[in-house]
Image (tube, rainbow, N blue to C red; front, side, top):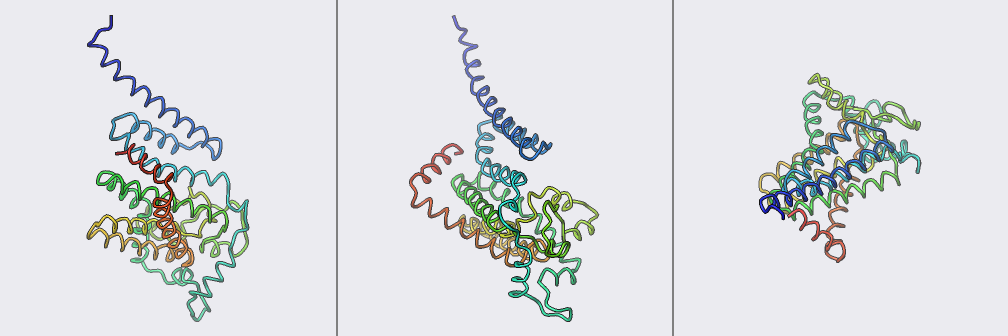
Length: 316
């Protein structure tokens, strides 16, 4: 005969065991696939560990990590781009993009016509260096922090923002493969010749590192997935998504803060020679496309709307 006192405890262990098995399976597949495609890194174990702990801990942490799995999918796809460089599939645009920038936005000087990147490289100031670094550090923490706020305030709004974020990135990734493009710093360093496997470069952000005697940007840009992915600037797309959804959620003064961050990142992208103005404009266009396309899919596709509703139910 079963001991009635032991039975509830035994039953309670079943969901935990199932959750643990699921988390370990997902983590193992991720680590093994990552090692196969891009090589093993300790970062992969950290991500797998975070996922496992949050998935098995409590109901709220499980909902949290399931909601943020959208961002994990983004990161994994971005990381796996290292295994399939976009220059394998299409020619890299270097000179044509540079000349288009100079023709449309060139600054006339005694040295001739300079792109805005070249002009700022020659006329940098310490205050702008510091502000550019601060703004550029916001490109991931701000969307993630905003998503976390929405998760605890309004799960449906969180889901809309997260899925729009993912859709915008997927559009950007497709363009990266259709139109590989070199950033401004590449031209400054190597000219118009294509060099496969070029490593990431901190470009103008090195002045921020030097000012504070740190290596934050040097560390970040040694992990870049592909330097020939400058067009569109997804750095410029992310803050616009945050600004739009903060406006949709009537966040008051925070809308002004996000507007300043958005413009600041746009400026920093050009000032530090990581993007042309054309890249920034393309990033803005991709963000707008992602917003509009998500709303259209939600309104016109019953299948997609049903998926969103089911996902909302899982994390609510």
